[in-house]
Image (cartoon, rainbow, N blue to C red; front, side):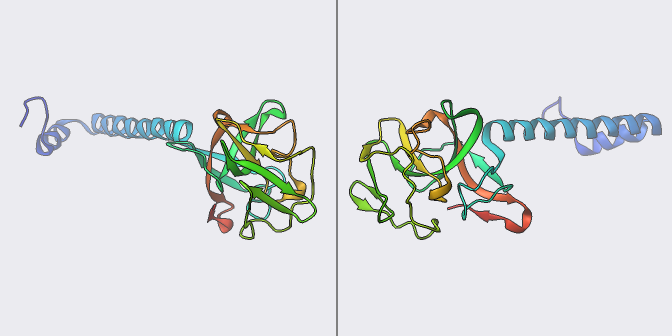
Length: 197
């Protein structure tokens, strides 16, 4: 046993020697120290690892709804097709975080048949029945096919006909460095908790 560390018995004996007032001060100090450590941990956790972000608007219905709070993280995250992500777009609105689904990553080719409502990636039609309620018919200013540049992703809202996304020139291809993180879950309201896929 090292000389500098006290055993529990020694600490207990030392506390018993203190007056009730000094004992209360020591206990208060210990509680404050624990509370500060917990506060610092939470600040670091929610600054660098996890974030809670509100959904604003209908562009991700039926996956996410207005007012949902999402749990978002970018820790060890590498974008891949199918992920729901939160990002910023300086051209569209630098003060607003947008949430969309990644459809294609760097090097992939995206094309959309607006008459049939089908999205194609590398010539293959996507099966989007798990997360899209209606086929895509809103063209915005998309002219395809488009190849996703290096370090970028192509995103679409799940509510395809009510979404400003990569079809819109002010958003276009999203630079991976602008991605705040991947959406992992809806955590509020509690009755709507779910993992986001």
